[in-house]
Length: 417
Image 1 (cartoon, helix red, strand yellow):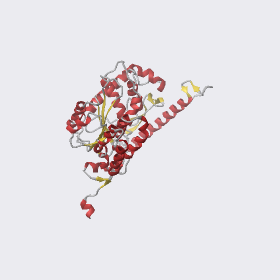
Image 2 (image 1 turned 90 degrees about the vertical axis):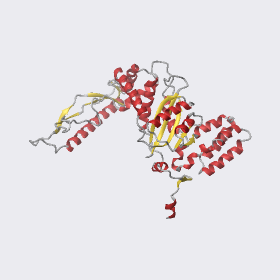
Image 3 (image 1 turned 60 degrees about the vertical axis):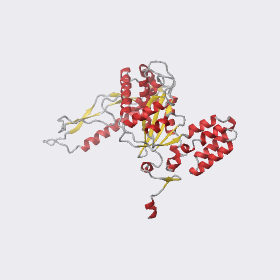
């Protein structure tokens, strides 16, 4: 029940708007729980005992509990179900379990997403509760002991992720990059080695997330060998920065995989070799290369760039001319995929939000915990990743289909027919 607002628009429990939101959330949750139970009862209405009495009936409510949500603390009384059916295999009573409000739940998943951010921002686990009190209006369900158990579980989740079987997932495309997050790693030059892949159905998935050295071929080789040992199949194309120590390792572990250099990184490297006064025109000239309609036009644009800048800035031109093959590899794939394959943006965009929320910390905290927190953030973000354009074409790429100027080339027998 809502209370009367004070003259300043507040209530005894805080802002009137916050209270309205919490009351609305409470009513919606109660209605959803009732509908869920009613559906369960209706589905099993024909289940009766020898005397004709229903085996599954309502049985009042569970004790009220407080759930920490993004709207603040919400009080809930979940409906109780008396299910007298017996599982024939185990001999145990069957139980109703709510998919909306699992047993003993004290917080929504969104709150769990906030905790890794707090840790990476420099807070210790003991600081979580007072930090979240202002946001939630209550520390219900977020004691220091609870948080410690969660962080321990996240570390175990990350370890399990690093050991999971990769043989059942086919990654056709892969993006690779070394990301500096300024989290609690062992050395200042260390970073997080990241690999994100595109499955045959066009969806994206985090493949690997491990501490290492961005320029170290051995760090990348160890990661790739480990993925291969766990059953990872050689991808068709890998996209990455040309300065990575990754490429030598890739040729060793997956020699048949094609290489595509990231145009965002390449553009930055070329501009570093040019005076600032030349940057605007050079950017447009380079954009004409990776935005060309096909590979032939892209090659022509490279020649134009070389004529314009070769005499004065040979080092800048060489950065593109020498890498022409691996800069234009994406043109051999479906045109729908070009926008995805010419940069490592899928990694950069994902980690940009993490970077903004992290800083160098010198307090207590372990390397494994920091990696686990980063992993949980990316795992959460992964649920919102969209599939690549033309997802149905990814399987054709794996099957060896040929694309000319971005368009699928029909097989000779089909063309002849």
